[in-house]
Image 1 (spheres, one colour):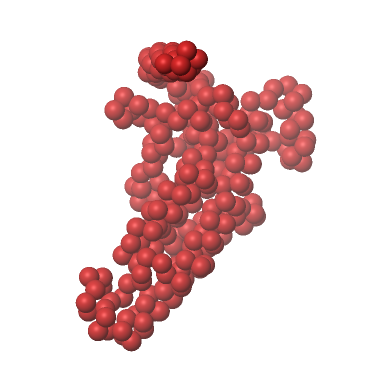
Image 2: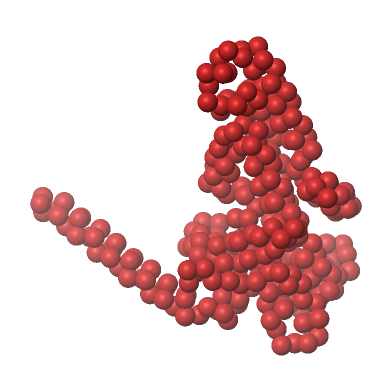
Length: 285
């Protein structure tokens, strides 16, 4: 089964949850119109195309058919997916970490009767939702570059990452995945029965920790865990990731001790260099 159809079937099954999705089929139609447009344009200027190194049925880097609708539509849909995921994941983890009266208050506020099993299933569904949309974005951008014989799709992906609009950058995705790995590793047999994501695990690449998950036709997704913006509390809007902290503290304590020491040395070096430069300015050297 092609991914487009599988994606549509998955999102149709989530209709009751009112989750935003990518217009995967619509975006593919835009690219199809682009192919038709470029083919007709190339036939009108065949003599010019023959002197070009590009195939006849390609679009230029600046494509009026695609760029005016494709990228703006995709960015809007990506933002909606990310916003919905972050909101629901944060609410779920707040409920998980709450205790006593505060937890019952959250359940009452959500107007639903909850249980630990329900929370686990919702977490699993949210991770699946995030990963399948990440795969959909990857595939549609790859399709764009294939149609245009360009790297505009990858450039767009880099721009989106700089805007922190890519769902794989969400700290809440790391937190949910860590939650389920911790659940699987716990010695509590009553909770161990609820373990999910057997294909999701904490791995080390070049000595650095990463979350690895396999989804749909052995598509492998790796999430780097060395990003200080996600893991420290000194940045504005930083998220305190309790489950990820537990996972890393349990599995790679030596790595984080070495990293903390290296960062401490680097900070002291920068402070020393700063004050030395200020002293030189002060004495006019």
